[in-house]
Image 1 (spheres, rainbow, N blue to C red):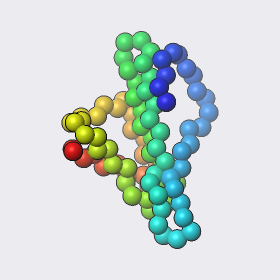
Image 2 (image 1 turned 120 degrees about the vertical axis):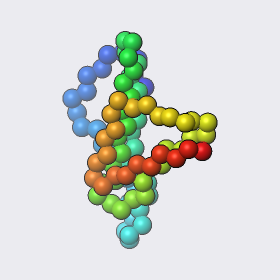
Image 3 (image 1 turned 60 degrees about the vertical axis):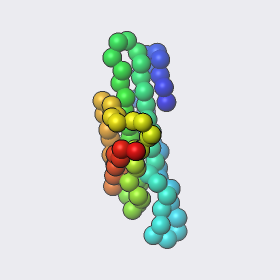
Image 4 (image 1 turned 180 degrees about the vertical axis):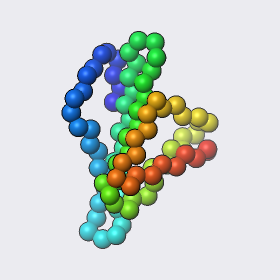
Length: 85
């Protein structure tokens, strides 16, 4: 989500990871919010594994050596890997 104007959200942010009937699950649910209101950006990453044994979310973008977030929210057994490509 990319916001370019003031926005107040009072709800619940949910993106659940993939699931299956067995012990194998898809990746975790992931939401990235980028707010560019005013001079300072606000970047938030939320990762939710929904208490499943999902693989970690891996940030691995070509030609990217650093990531900037003001907030990283890992919930319900979520894990995060950052890998240089």
